Length: 157
Image 1: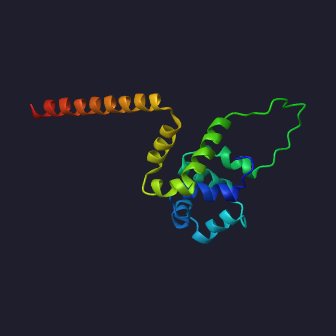
Image 2: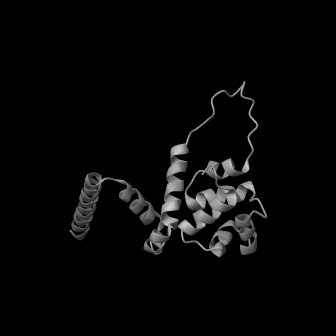
């Protein structure tokens, strides 16, 4: 993400979620044209819009702030740069690149964000871990199904 601009990042996030500019703009209570200016760099979004965008995409607002805020830190007082969350940022960048890749774009088009994330991380695992995950999901599903049946039997009696 270090080489990306805020404009690129906004556009990639929106496309990875299959959101229209109109949808994102309505979420921010602004016009589509104003949001379009965010993606072209004509306008820098205000902090409240960045916060709402972070909520919309389920990411930390720092992801946006790092692209907007210029840091002027005196290194005498801050010798160790804070690097918290870089793994999350790298994962998010990988996810966006993966979903937006031409060979994957059509596959992911009709999936929800959670389904895309699940598939993305699933594909990063080796086959043994994939099998373990599938087994876990089957067991989890069966347990929920059994709980519902027991609850239903209790309410019928």
